[in-house]
Every structure is written in C-alpha cells, then in structure tokens.
Length: 315
Image 1 (cartoon, helix red, strand yellow):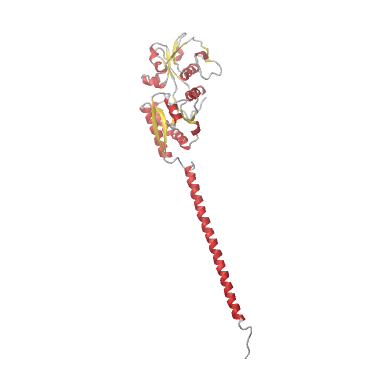
Image 2 (image 1 turned 60 degrees about the horizontal axis):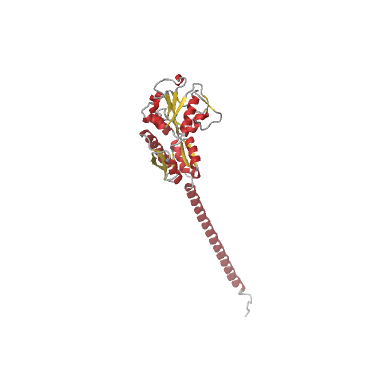
C-alpha cells in the first residue's frame, strides 16, 4: 500500500485559504463599519453646526427683524394729533419689525432725558439738537441722536402789523428767554433781515447782535408768556406749542422760520444713550418713524406747521 505523504496538503491549503479569506472579509467588514460610523458622526456634526449658525443668525441681528421686542419711548404729554402720529409709527414698528412700542409721557422738559439716563425709557423723542447739546453739557450726560423726526418752524406773530417789514424804528419784539429758544428767535430775526449776528455765533443772546438797523427793542420773556404779550409789543416770536395753546392760528404768522442750515439745530430727534445707539431694535424704531405713512399722519395732524425733517435738504 502506498501512502501519499503529501495527500492531505491540498485539503489543508483549502481550509487555510478559507480561513484567510474569512479573516479578510471580517477585516473589510469592520473597516466599512468604522467608515460608516465616521460618516454618520460627520453628518450629525454638520447638522448641529448648521442649526447653531442659523440660530445665531436670527438671534444676533441677521434675521429680518428684532423678534418680539418691546421698546419704551419717552415723549411729552401732547395733543391728540401727536398721539395719532405715534399710533402710526407704532403700527409700522409692529407690522414690519415685530417691535411693540410703549410710551411713557412726561409733563416737564427736564424729565425725558433723566429717564433715559436712568434706564426708565429706552429712547426719547421730544427735543431738538440744540436742546440735547445744552443738556449734555449741563448734566455731563452722553445722549446722542439716532434719527431725525420733525421740525416745527418757529413763527413771528403780531396784532399790529401784517408783514414783518412793517416794523418801525424802535419797535419792541418779544422773544423767549431760555437759552436755546432765545437763540433760535434771534436767528429768526437775522433770517428776516432785521438784525445781524457776530460771526461764528452758535448760541445767540442779545449780546451777540452785531447790527440792529431799526433799533428794535428785544424783550426777553418766559416762553409761555410770549403769546400773552402780543397786546403789549409790536411782534413776538412764539413757539408752536404755546401758539397752539393760546389759540393762535399758525397761518396768521407774519414771518415763518426758514428751513436752512441755521435751523438745522432745531430739528427734533429720537435720542438714545450713546452705548445703545447701534442696537438693531432702536434703529428699526427710527425706520418705523421715517416712512411715508408717518409723513401723511404729520400732514393730516398739523398741515405745514410741522414738517417731516429726515429727508429735508438744507440750503
């Protein structure tokens, strides 16, 4: 009997080959599973990153509007006309920017800026540039304008003459005696051609008058008394609110302050603390004010006694 010494080698090789193949398949399967897990984890992380970016976009100002915010604005207790204008602004703020406007009303001009500095209001809208400049200097505050609203041209009234050119030599004109309004009144007389002021005058007083060809007598009174003085003087420079309170029709004025570079400082503004001037919601409140709808509301309420000022071209 002949034994094939190497006869079992083929079977052994076949078994060894099968084992090796199985091992290779196992390794390949394992590697594939690892790769799939890595891909799956990568996809998950990519989704997380996208969600975070989108959330940040809408949370920090990249979205369409300031979502669901409330902004409190300090204003003076005014007329029904003023309320109608702010109602229009509030509607635009809500509809377009999803901002709810709340109003805190004041009766004294010293109150709104104090409330702004203390944080009792977010913004205020009652003053012009000149008032704000004087306030910041006197109170060492840091309040800034973030947008223009209106200008109310100051007017000259008289019960004795029909035209400002009819003022005679030595006639008396009443002007408000507070710093900003007296300066404004004197600039009005300058623009009317009645006086000249010293060069580079910004805040005018009677001492700033350089020439007074008609020797006009300037009578300084509390602003609230200028309308009452009309029976005693030849003419008076009267603020719009006091003229309205006295029942004086603004169309009866003998001279209207021109809107030019001299009057720029009398443009009313929306103001904020400087540290908050770039807040998106506050900028959107300004945008909500500066619209065609607000212009229409101002014209309906006041005719030409108040003018939208945000797009006026000053000469």
